[in-house]
Length: 616
Image (cartoon, rainbow, N blue to C red; front, side, top):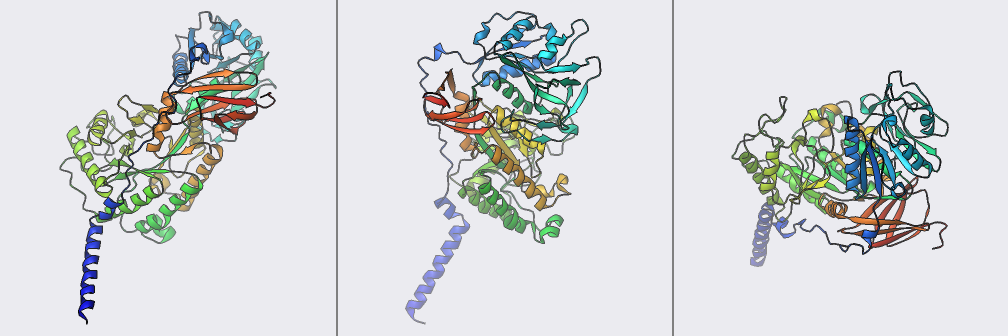
């Protein structure tokens, strides 16, 4: 062998040695790392419209019965919604007269079904007859000494009602129209999925039923024109679940024509427990369906499917990382000596980031950050003895993720099992200083003692962005849940887990059945709500900032709708309900998204929507 040949062999061997050692130490990750450092929140318009004080925001009258818990609850929910939408209201007791100039109000909301107790009821009917809108938020009711007169029932579209008979229970939902945005054709099965106490009644032929029970025989929401105006009636008892707020917002949006209200306008999709350690060996369900190991199933079947539907259904993923599935809750918390888990983090995490996704944190392990005695029943997890242990474990997961992605800002946190105590929340914000987003549950049973959230921004700059639905087998109820939240606030948020195939509730389902179920659900969302922008958790923050900060005024003219907006950071988005057809627009994009419904994206401080048939 020539000396030159030997020299070059030695050089190549040394180079390869350095290369593989550098790669083993993740050197290339440090060279080519992504950061997730920028959250665009450029103020688009912060100067209030100079004539804002001369234009009154849409104003509603809310009539309530202070002696009724149900009526007070409905009053509270209505006022909360109106405040959130930057609208105004005057709340009036049922035994007091209306003193406002009723020609200036957008609608009257009745939070009691005992109509004969309302002293201003004649004024309400006069208001509707002259072109106004009134809404009854709960089923009709009467007392023996104050029955509802037949002529009043007739004006409300009721042709027969025997109030002496026992009330009935309605099960399920059938959406006959787009009363909720994009809802036409959605059906929720009966039994416990959706039920409410209703009046057994018959409607007149000219009443329009927007929503009925699962059988289609019991009217739940109907519309009855009276004079030049309209009544809307909900034939059910007040429901405390937040997902019913879409009906409330839609009632408000049906008060008169050309009602426009702000929404967020984005959709999120979380992959919980991802990346995470992948079980070794075989699982019987995977072996029987694919004859491969669990790790091969993840890499060759599950992840390619998730990548495919992200493209076909227009999704951007936020994956939240877990380091261990152990039950350690007492320090010291040493790095988990599991190379395969680390390899999964690097492989799947890098792939997720380079397809436009985001990485967040789920926890050191899957033990919820709660102290002993936090839940009434015996928990299925190991509680933490103190906040110091919580912080030490969070410090370890922070080290773990930054060792793999050293310059990355991990902004999103999802609590394990959707359970989080106040002490756990404090530990998160103390140990993970980059966290800006907490995502748990939007709604559910109080008995579960889960961490339930509103969509909100705290004073410390932390955002609560809860999930609405979850899983690979969404039902009609899940579609309804997303529909009602999209109607009220304009947000879609769904969670899945990589290992749901192994869950007890999935025991009778194959992976083929599960993936088909999820894809059908997402196709429904994409076809009904294609106007939502797909974002990761961090990318959603400018949208939420605009929603929380926005102020606006609306001028309704015969030929156009004029919208003035300010204090929005990213873009101002609205839903508009109008019977008119749009001819053109200026400084805004207008998209028809359903019967009498438009999505409006503002591009300038003064926007105009011109109606067909106008001279403009």
